[in-house]
Length: 427
Image (cartoon, rainbow, N blue to C red; front, side, top):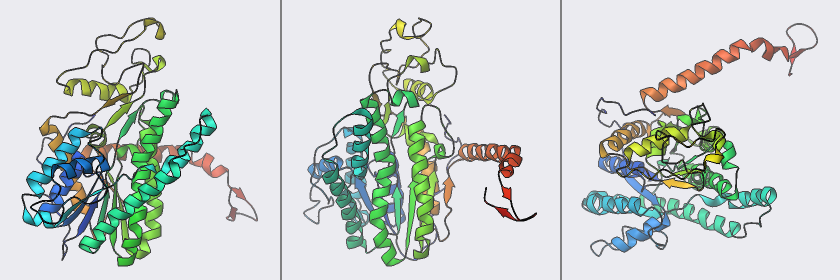
């Protein structure tokens, strides 16, 4: 894991533009979403902030109608605080203490309910039914319609209020930790795979699909999708997390060609792993003995992230129970084995509690990169955040290039020449 740069982040630099732009931010109640909203509003742009329906319910109960004027919070009915009450309460404080306190911000900001994850229900229901013998997911079709409707409503709110969407920023992210075998071990761990793709892949896909008609009509738009450098680098113990990012990048690369004639730009934002993992929900599959740090020599993300969570926690958890017979050498875990994310019996869920200075530094780097390209006339297809991230990607590309050269003769040997020298028909 990397550490934030000790050097101060330079002031935010937005591309020049004649009029305020309209941003639509998904996962706006996340730490990154709040930081992005603060930067956008402070710059003078308009913002549509999308939050989970449960988070919106807490907002409605907390504020409802502000000063008897137009409701600040619009969208679906509130469904409760949900599992991430602390995150939702932080967002409520941001709205009440910063947005509500500034009349201009209030006029340029709307909050809507959006759960853009679940278009995959029918697909995953079929997968589970086929391979595990469970019944079909009967709620899938209706749930899919509800989710797509929420995406369309969020887009309509932006267009009705501000006339257009200039920049769509998809920043939803959750991390599922576990080796491929661990995540295939039970129906519950298979559900983790489903949830990973619902949040990290289908969520952005749903809102992008809903936004395209409005952008095509105006012949303007910039879609920015946050993935991570793990979409360049395979990471042991984060295989499904990496897979969801690689899938999303393949989708975005293809879409970029399709929408270019409509003057719609596409950028993939790739911050360091810490932003995606340490500022969002982490789920961990039960540890298999074969992949215990005591018996498996390769470093896995579980141990690295678990050890970091131990150090960050003010009250470290008690060591999980282990059966000595479950380890090949019959030994018990040592006192140096990370405690977080190392249960052998259950799925663990963690919400990292970063020191404020660490969180601020991580967020500052990514926000600086985001606003520098948001709405740019000629934005990059990929924007990698931070020196260490750039160095890691360069090293990966160097390795790929070297392997290509090492085996270039074998690669070319499969071509079949016909009709004389220089005429090559595909091999």
